[in-house]
Length: 316
Image (cartoon, rainbow, N blue to C red; front, top):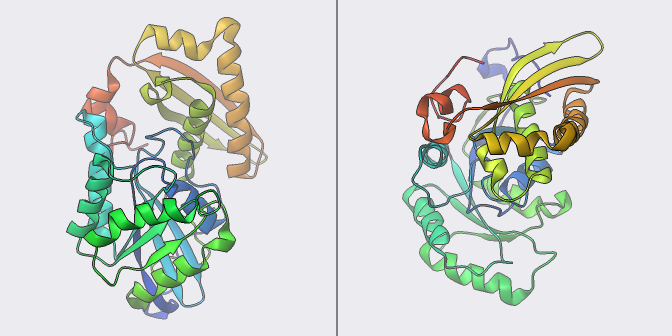
């Protein structure tokens, strides 16, 4: 997944077009799918449901003459609770750090919603080079794509390029990567060329468990669950992982466990497969369900779960 940082001084690292690329968009525009395709690695949780991405993830894409540091961010949405505020603070921080902003749009949905307008305002206010990316070119027609371009383009600088991609198809990403390269500043690489992320493995693992919850549980229940990794032991031939699924109500706990424990067993079995692929080793996974009343409204709990930018929580 990553290698230790090189002991070489920065002036001896490769030179090229290097910088941070913020992925910006409303929920479910394909930002996490794009990140996984660029890296050719399942780093970010992916689901058709909104608010799949809760925290900023860094993906390091290195090639000859370029190191693009992709910042996957939560989808821009309306919401006033502490969790929503924390997610949107993550978006603002990514835009502040970015050298280039990739504004992703989904032409399968009519543009012009309040979320679209907010995305446009954030992109402009960042005062960074912007690339307008129209995703899902494989399942949309020219009329749908033009409607989205016509909404966003007039509000962006006239030199803003418009790129059509299918985030699921890495072969479609060449023009986007070229546009990013031409807009990144030149300098030494910031990470080793074989490094994929600075996110520690256990945090990626927590996101993959959330991906399973989003797949298996109905309605809004997955959004009421936080995944906390309690233990992550790297043994010679396997990983031993223990995680707590924090819910907000006893009724939610009963649903997650399921009749006769069938649901929690399915969650564990599906999560073990994803974690084994992440770790490259067999995984023994223990899951526990705990009621943490209204955790989404409690900033201390959000910090402990790693969902508040700049809050280290328990240091897990």
